[in-house]
Length: 302
Image (cartoon, rainbow, N blue to C red):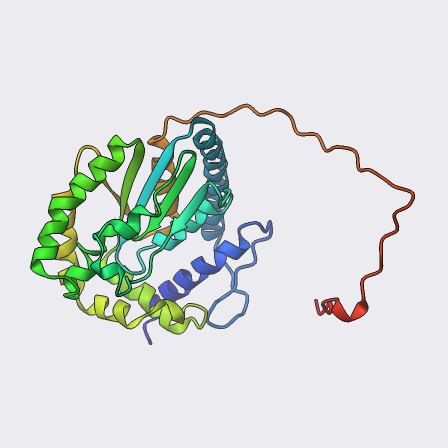
């Protein structure tokens, strides 16, 4: 860790995670996540962040319009987010859902299947999370686990692997015929960039939980994952549900490009709403507010 350039990149990667909590602040108060001390940003870096936040807020405003349109029309949307570990899938999902109603736009992030689920039809546990009318479901990883991690880590047999490639396109065509709009994103990062992000997680106590033994093993098997990804894209890129590859080495650009592209795939329009007016608050002479017992009040430490 004596490489100054590598340390700088790790710092920038860690700082990116903290930006989420700073997005609504008007002041630009950058903090070095490794030391907790304030650090100076160059004018170019400040302007880059300003442009990013300005465009992010604009796109999130469009996502709110999209949400209204989905509810109004009863549209059904499924969006899959796939990619290597630390590719930035979770980051873009957070920015998409940040301003939306969780009853309309929800995230499905399924854990490893239990013993019972392993005996079910492979797609069964994913089907239960599909949207009803007026809903958007974001899959943080999906049924493509079988074509990726399960294949590389030998969690499935060759026959199960081949059956997946026979079934997945038909399953997706069924979803589309049923009226679900299916969008599939693959977040692409370089070998070097994944290495930097993994090092950042190792040195950030708030992110160490993100590194599982499976993540570390995936780092070792980079080339096997690459081969599996290439086969997956080739065999499941269908006209009804094509793959879209997001260049994700720059996290902020990847988020903006993905959201912009997502919006471009939807024929949404702004839905007019009746102006909202707060009703007058009622007052009753026989009502007196009771004092709150002091022993149940949370201490005001801050």
